[in-house]
Amino acid sequence: MKILIVCGAGASSAFVAHRVRHTAAARGLDVHVFAGSESDLPASLGPVDVLLVGPHLAPRFEKIRLQAVHAGVGIALLEETVFASQNGDEALDAAIYAYKTRDWAETKK
Image (tube, rainbow, N blue to C red; front, side):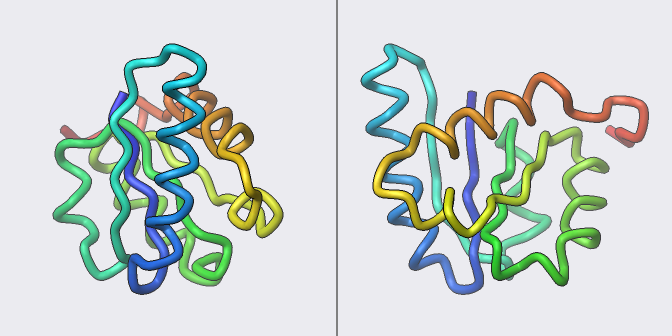
């Protein structure tokens, strides 16, 4: 599974991506995690399965969600506590859930 984590500029999402990578490795999961910024969207959605969105992008989440759904990408808005957590467990769990429940009915691929 390929996971893209975005925030405003890509800095804080890099820390979250690192924690998610570490957690996935500890669980023995084959997961590739990348960090990016909102400005990279929608171009960066092509090669990913799941998009995790930083909580500070909540006001623009619906617009981002529509881009992800259009690309067939699962999406989740991370809560502040999950985004700031010192481990990647909840963020990885959110990614797995978003992957399993992505809305294929709205996909325009």
